[in-house]
Image 1 (cartoon, rainbow, N blue to C red):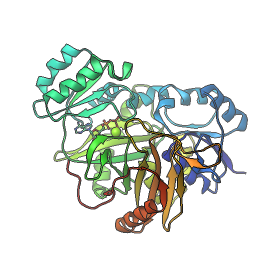
Image 2: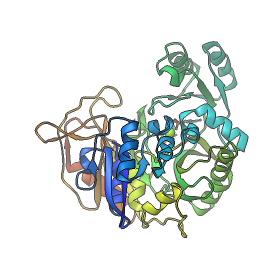
Image 3: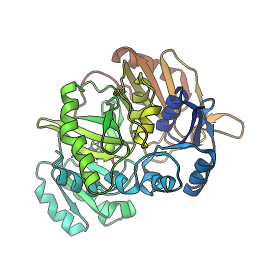
Length: 419
Ligand SMILES: Nc1ncnc2c1ncn2[C@@H]1O[C@H](COP(=O)(O)OP(=O)(O)O)[C@@H](O)[C@H]1O
Ligand SMILES: [Mg+2]
């Protein structure tokens, strides 16, 4: 008898999780809440109104629960599930603070000696303005709390920094999430998203990825939740894996255990590969989105035993293996990352060597597939090498009709990004 799994979330990350779980020989039932229209055929989608309903449903149906997004983790969904005897993949609220408070993450990193940008934490406008003097070579302004990718400004100069601080601390643009601010030194280098599954002590790497934050081709325009991703990251090597393990992953897991809040689940370290070695930009308490859409299809081994391991089950004997390359191109609705229209019809004709993961798509009254938010689809091309994967991803994009959609033309190009 196989297991049943409930995936919480509606995004492309959750679609990719559902896709991976549906392939597992150990899983015979996949449910998603609320899920999206792209999951049809892979998962039952159920609308569970709130956390109480999720706990009750998972307990009654005897399902494992995999929590996709950060917000439910930050409000303690994993704790509540565990208290009800439900087997859950995702950290406790206390452990998830490593993501939900950037000031907390800085304190943890300082305590554990983890390489990261120099930073100060400020609460008031005057204090913040004065602290800018400490970052003559460039500063990054970060809202402490969860901001769905809208809390960070990488500042070109002091005027921009002051404006970003004013928005958070005077105009209260993000509410409580922005009333504490982390000011940090601006680092230069290439970024990398490293994810591990961990039981709080042991950990295993999943395929490292590169994501593309800026809206526009050529890495220009506003920051977004992510406009594309590639895996594996071209700069990943066994030596880097050892260095990241010794200087970052082991120390953070040890520190969180010491603080009485072991991290169990998927830990994401956002790294900058600087001239002085890898430094941590942030930690996330879950799979990246869109990174999951390019990482999960590369796994040669079943994902489910690793989720079980992160949820307190037995630790598999051998580290997960991956092969080939994946390139994911996000298609976003017109207006994104600002206000977007929803209800725009989408048609997808499947292409060769490609998978399309949906984000928040729904069926309208007439049964048509329509968008339900900004980032709406990820066209993922797969291949034995990055160039094949890239070509297949863009060939798949051409087979999608989505009026006014925006996508970057340069995802997976081998030239290095400008910053
Ligand atoms: N210290 C830094 N120096 C340069 N760029 C940074 C720095 N911190 C963050 N960034 C840029 O801002 C992006 C978002 O910052 P991050 O800390 O990952 O917050 P979030 O993902 O919560 O918005 C990063 O992916 C990176 O491009
Ligand atoms: Mg980030």
